[in-house]
Length: 320
Image (cartoon, rainbow, N blue to C red):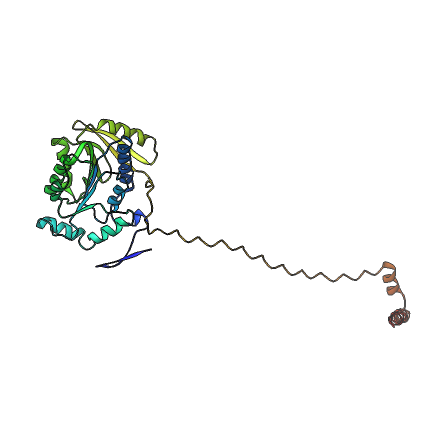
């Protein structure tokens, strides 16, 4: 595998998407792929935006859906200073030891020929850098603090095209209550219509969610690897999805991918040595006839010895 030298030492470059560090569950890979492909099949055009990229796993995936003429922008602090103490503490705790722009770019270029437009800084710079009503898909996975997430949602609402999709990460994790409050507040008070929720992400739109929900239910109904719960809350249909042994959608290998060495062919088992022939028992001497036994028993010893001697002499003569 190829390597890159960074400030933290030599790092192996990814061969497949799963080699890239980060949190991008298989179910969300399926949903990203389905939503983006559905837009493309419908002829929808618009730019892509990801706020908070970490090491690039989901950014790489999004980049595979960039159509000709579209722009792709990503934003992250990387090594930059956080805008406030709370954000700095959060970044230092979770990312600062590993997150560098160089590492992200090396991972991204392992799969794509060109980098997206990279904004290095807090997410508050996005509204001044991305045009209003320009994006068809926005993924928000940056700060978990309420004030920042509130601002990211506001930016997404302004940046998205009518019917565009926003995805909010960590909307229900126990360690991210700020995201939960900002996300559901947007649903209750700011016109965001939920499309579905996965284990980690909320998918929504400021357009009509019903057509895409109907299409999603049809797609999920054809699968046996996804749990489905269809609920109602505060006047919204909430489709909850959970992976059931789901496999990730196909994704191209990186430029560093090498085929695994073929396993050596199994060697034939040695033929067991032929067993030595069992020794044959010596043939038993033919039993003496009853007449002979009777003669031996009845004749006088002198005569018997004479007969034996005569037979011995006869055998000796035959052997000369």
